[in-house]
Amino acid sequence: MQPGSKFVLTADGIVGAEVGRTWSEVSAAFEAEGGYDPEFADDCQSYAHRGGKFDAMVVGNTIVRVEVSGPDVRTAKGVGIGSSLAELKQAYGNRLIAEKNPYEGEDVQYVWQSEDRGLVFYMSDGKVRFMAGGGDAIRLPEGCH
Image 1 (spheres, rainbow, N blue to C red):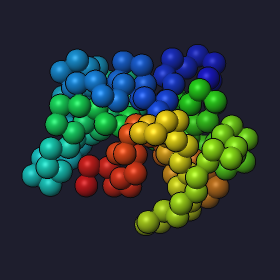
Image 2 (cartoon, rainbow, N blue to C red; image 1 turned 120 degrees about the vertical axis):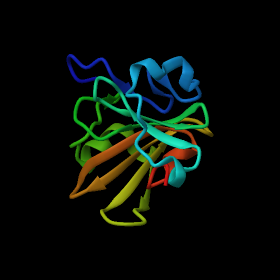
Image 3 (tube, rainbow, N blue to C red; image 1 turned 180 degrees about the vertical axis):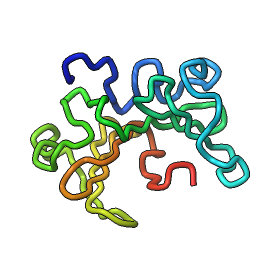
Image 4 (cartoon, one colour; image 1 turned 90 degrees about the horizontal axis):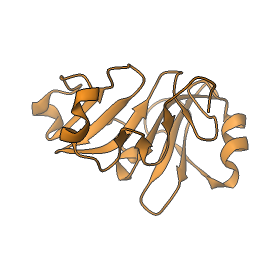
């Protein structure tokens, strides 16, 4: 963990915003307005943490993934936004599963922690640009779309 950082991304989310928790349990820590048009996103919204460090993707009334795109959150192995592919490989080794990004950028790297939970790292220019933890929802490149 980065010195001074209290937020650590895991396959289960971040403490206080764990995947599987109900929105009513954690909503006070997040902005009241979601990030998607309810007509377009169906029953899915992405809410920014009031501390600005991460977002929670909520389907129905349940957190399904926690998303990080800023530098203040790391995984337990020290990987964060801006980490290189070499650092990612050093941290997770042969547990990484590479897939091509269906849109732009480079590879998408997955680390499955269990049968139904994992981490995803979107790479661009050889660096981690976005990461998320959770269940199958980490496979959705557009989030709630």
